[in-house]
Length: 180
Image 1 (tube, rainbow, N blue to C red):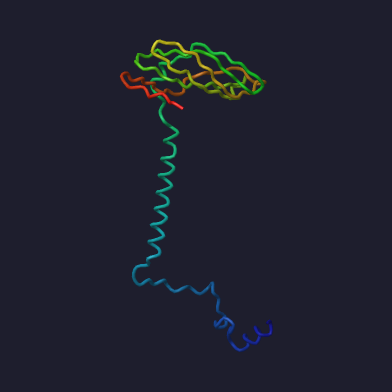
Image 2 (cartoon, rainbow, N blue to C red):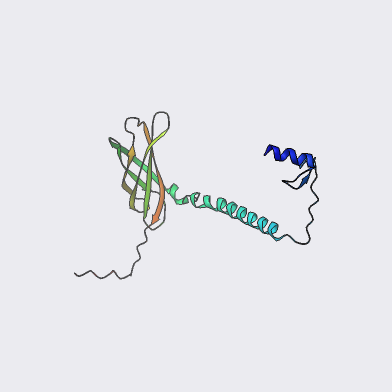
């Protein structure tokens, strides 16, 4: 191979590549790019990239809206009057009472959540449950079930999480009994 290159240099050119002797690809400038008319691939790629970018932007913007729903403003009408915790290993049961101080004429099912903390203020467990048919002015019991690190437990906070309105319509026929 080396002998072939020496022979080519003696003969005055580089026959392997079809270039004259002394040709350097770095020092030779490229001719200007001449485009006659519209180059369709460039516009298509730009359109695809813009479409994908817009889709990702909309996806990121819409994804958080479902998680960031506003809490029901009627939750402030429900007050936890008492609560106590019973722990067994990692199981936690919270018993207590909740009061409806609102004036709506319908009862509510109130979902309550308990968050358990250690002495440093870190969350070490949670529990959830429901107080059913809480009428205005009424106090109802609840039981929450969850998990807790009982060795590190220090305190808990019980809060109403959500409401479900229980509307009992009068003058509606009751369903017929099921006969086997």
